[in-house]
Length: 442
Ligand SMILES: Nc1nc2c(c(=O)[nH]1)N[C@H]1C(S)=C(S)[C@@H](COP(=O)(O)O)O[C@H]1N2
Ligand SMILES: [Mo]
Image (cartoon, rainbow, N blue to C red; front, side, top):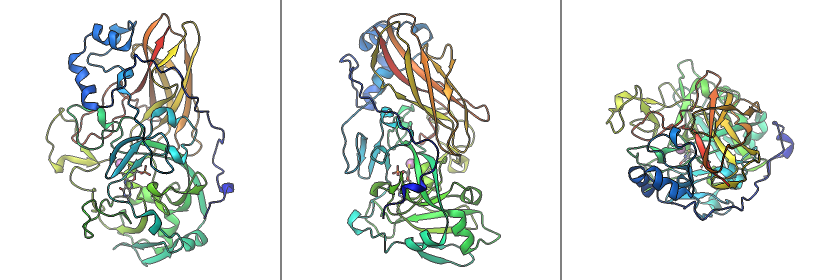
């Protein structure tokens, strides 16, 4: 059941090496508890901060008040799920694990580093039989409801491979204050690689779409955490327009291999650029709807933000919450790892990824002075729409001390990442603040 590697014709095939960073300064204390990291906000003074980071902070004047130095804001905890490597474990029931930024350095995220976000209990791995797997297409706006086996899907429809970025709507939630409930993701609930499958559009055209169709919803084979078989863990979807795009796939392979079990084997929906919650795993059924899909986690406050900005901590009625569509512009620094030591006088080369939902990233800027001044980074074009983009930059530091390197992406419509926190919202979605790493110049 291996997908042919010949189908992986999308874009660049070279990857960056994930050089292990040997310098791991003891002074860069590893705080794994987000609560105690928050505590730093209250207690910190410039002196205390300099003591913790291990040296003076040359651009302290331009450092925003209350900023937690990136040297303390990173966490790494060993974690292992079979087939996964180096992920940071947030929860085990359901399993939620994110990728530390330095493991997102490859052009395409390797299977072993792709994050996991489960809302329920995945189907038992041993119980999944790809030969027997079926996908039902139904819903009130489906003309000829039909069930396909996986091999029928593969036979009847043309295959496509696209590099598509998936980012959890709650990625970055851990930084919001007051805190939002849910997984306290740092930066790593994101990944981008080449998905292979058939276009959702081709399958929906085959079953026929009624004129009144407006939305498409999915159902997966995972079960509710409570064990109640009448409950569904998650059933989300996208408006018809997004469903019919070239890059919206019903996929069986990732990076030339079967999709890993925890990421939706043997079949999943991939609608990149939107909250990854719309990309249904262990895909069993797709419904064409004549209303906005009303499945589990479509309504209430799930994957919604206030339609108008609100003050932090506000209670917002459901009627004033709007559904999240394309994700905002964002970037990460994937090399080097935060906490590196660098020699004064030597050029500091660094790099990362940038993405902007359905849009392209048009500009990438970097700063070593807490955003007081910005310098252009070089930015590659995406290999296809909705793929993340590689960027790189180099800088020299003016004197010894503690620095933060910040990265800021701007999308094709001119929207840039905010330097600190974007609009607070009750569930802690869409934190696209600039990523930063700590650098000790000696
Ligand atoms: N069936 C099913 N699909 C699902 C989920 C789930 O729990 N069950 N989680 C969603 C959410 S919230 C996210 S962020 C992505 C995560 O995909 P990954 O686990 O492959 O990283 O899958 C989405 N699709
Ligand atoms: Mo998510």
